[in-house]
Image (cartoon, rainbow, N blue to C red):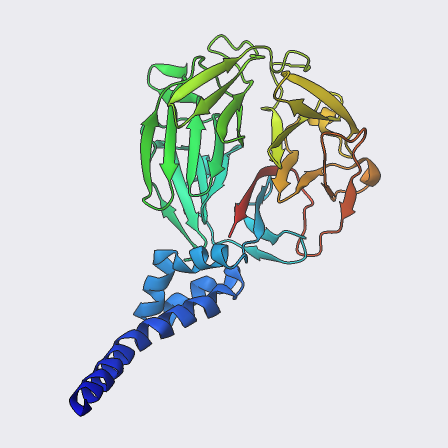
Length: 368
């Protein structure tokens, strides 16, 4: 009996010794998960253990499990070469490091999307179309990985740690080619994979995730003709469904920006920029309902430079405001929409975290 008790005590002691480091590690992860995301990159300078912890993304997984995930806006204005990260209420901001690319990369609009805890930026430099990614955990820019078929002016949408990129056009010695190519990017493995192509070639289109499917709306075909059709991709069946006349009632022009769309609570909303109207989509009838006017002057720029995003249960809208006709500052508005309402109400948000005085080239939302 004495030997059994002694053996049990030794085993318990040994297990405690072996599990204590793991318990300590888990405790550290939970503590760091409560630190603001903008401070994470500093942990890499403490020691190798914390540096590896950042690279593993375990802190972000713990944040999701504890319900600590928050949205962050990554914005680039027309007069700047550095992105700014704002919190969801625009009360604080942080400047991202400079991106070390040539001047060609900053000469025009860029393709940006947040997937996982990475900001992906795709555009042209003197060598061709290239990919840059900003990793929030390291607070640093990295080049690549390159797309399988490099292109721009595509539709894109992220879902967790995956993002889909559809259509766009390629640039080669033979000229510009509009494509129906689709690729999927995995932020955890940093790899690209080819997906079944769409039914239509299209550029200047928009993408979103709606009811578990990847939707691609509008754009122009290889003849520069506006497309009123859309397509939805079901990853489970690996198939595309063509949706005729989804944008048939919209005013389209050749110089118009891609459709400004956002999804809240599995409901699709769209800005009819030529009329400064908000519309909501009925997926069952393939029709749109008007929800009133918007407080920004999207019609003046044909939708370019206007930010329209979904954040939790809200729609966020940024643009040149009717209420600030004599001011260079842009308006920031928030609304909690519902497809059943007759007219939407917009709340004016005061930006205390930084300046939004110029035209916005890019804006992406990260959940981290």
